[in-house]
Image 1 (cartoon, rainbow, N blue to C red):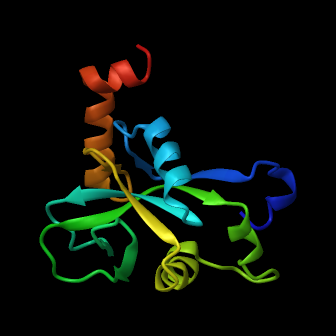
Image 2 (cartoon, rainbow, N blue to C red):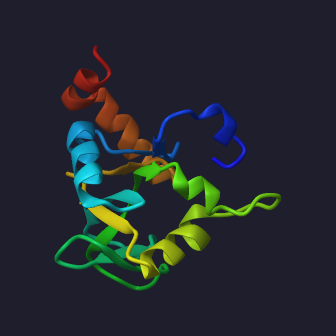
Image 3 (cartoon, helix red, strand yellow):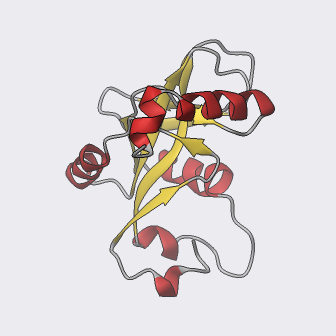
Length: 152
């Protein structure tokens, strides 16, 4: 994102991870929540029954993210859905000249400042980061909801 900053004229940026798909995400509702929430970043979060291979996201009753927990033995939890809206000011907070992970470096700092809002995303969250996840995504996209999503 930092390298592309000069090519990004918008004040609010939509960022989507390339390995996940949240097919039921309501983008208009995400944008409305982001504008109303006043946070620097609004993070889509998805509920998952087995959160063990993911880090989890904790947030309060006002949906402000309070912590990110590393992968651990957990059952159900909320995980980063890989989609978020960020204000351009976030780019100024990313150091230049070195690689920076938003998830492990920038997000925890923003959470400590109360600058991340959580936006619940309706399941499923499809993650093609493992062979099993890729199969699940493929099956979903071949099914009726996936064909509708793809306009087929």
